[in-house]
Length: 491
Image (cartoon, rainbow, N blue to C red; front, side, top):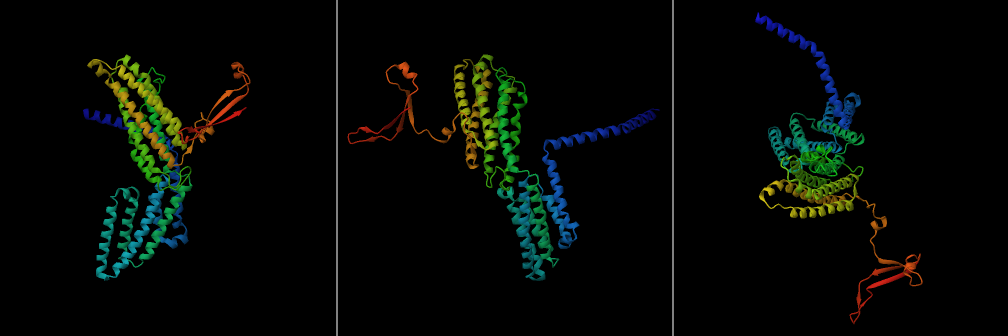
């Protein structure tokens, strides 16, 4: 009886699952479609890249579909399709890197492979496999060892891999065939055709530049630091001008910076392969981005301490916090504005050093005020000292952050010279003062016949005295002559 009951329950569950299957299938398909749509909307370039790869594959397939091309290359046309699949990368730099590596590695390895076969045949039928084995071992081992060198690993690793593969295939297959030159020519030609099509499509059809991505990434990371500073001020001092509304997320924007090193290194490496485009010249200083990014990442590490201060349950006395609140708020605000100006300088490739230096100077003045406030408010008892240690740690971290902001500014200034940033004058200054130095000093005062001071002040006539500073000359009697030349103009 109990077994029959269990069987009925299992049967009912099975029927229920069978009945619910269509609705679950529909929900699952809908969920995946929405996920794919969101994935495409996040970066539409992914969809464009997929279309570009499909276009490249279609073009190289003509080596099979068009009879004259098939008669010329035969089954070697498959190497062109394989090249497109392997070489096609998301960025122009990635495609150029793999395409050029594959082309040159195939050319060099093919030439050496044909030479190795002819050299081995000179040694007779018995000595040929021995010579080929020695050459394959020697060049294969040497090429593999070269892949351990950091520079080769970074830029030519794929080329070394293709060299080993191509040389081994040509050398070994040449032992059993007499048409080694024909095979090498067909394979090299199809690989060059496939690589050329990939490169042309990548450059001229909605190109994705690795250098531009690196440029935007570094600037956006600096903006994230600025937003985190503003968010910290709003959370740690909720009564300040920066309210705590919406700061909970911005204070932690820095976290993505801590894991960005590998992406930055990859983009910088690929950017070196790219030709000059847009605002970026042929020999753009891509390595300088890595220096700036390293300083930004070191600065972001200090935000972990600030985040710990925000999340900490230990709070200092309110009267002590109120004494240091103003200088700390000014430090975070001015440092944040400096970071925003630096990011704007990178994004627009313009120099805003006057604005940045002003904010950094204001931050340093606030640091002096903070140190003075800490000296005045320093507690006398050990108990009070333990209570204010977290706040002192926070203040010390803010001072370190200002130091890193200054280092970032100096690094960007150095980079701006190499990258030929355009000079952007401070709008508060006239263009003449921005372009020329003030060469003269002078005074202006009203002039009118008579000694009435009130009439003189209301006079439309003025005397302009311009003093040309010249190096003093001394005569034989040590009398200072010509120290200043004055020109008087009455208007």
